[in-house]
Length: 231
Image (cartoon, rainbow, N blue to C red; front, side, top):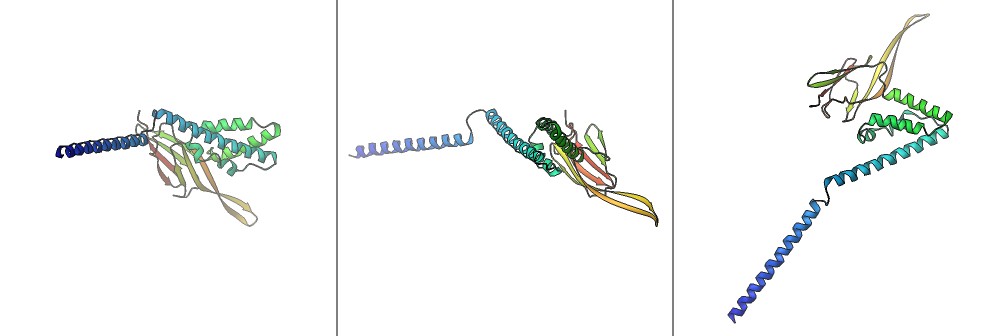
């Protein structure tokens, strides 16, 4: 009788051990399934890229429809109409955003005919001049073995009044510049002073290391120094 109970105890312990082993195996399998997605990483990178491309295409389509409607209805395209699309999301989601910007311009412009095309190109040129061209603000790019320095000279810029924002893809500069003039009148000489606000967008130098931009704002001058990419 005693031997019978002993065998029953052994069988019970064996079943308990097998059950515990199955439980542990199942939990490990589930954990592995959660922590290691099936398939090589490049599949997910490709899926992410395709999703990002679809989102960009959808945004472009919405902007094109908006532009066409405003032109057709006789409404002008103002700076905010372009800024809303060519924003930080646009610059961060493309390999070469400045080249892509010109491609978008050519594509959308080509959809218009005659006078509407002239209108769109005129609005584009005005916005592009305001945002991308430095005009009277002289820029210099100096390089050493270790760094790249972009200097922007802004006549009429008061010290430390510019707002500089740098990402991996672009430099955004917002500032106000004052100009003064002297005019003669019947009562003598009259001095006039005006102030105008600007927002400029510039590409990060190709040989600048990302995330290393440091800004110095002085009197009528802005300096942005980057570490140089290591070859």
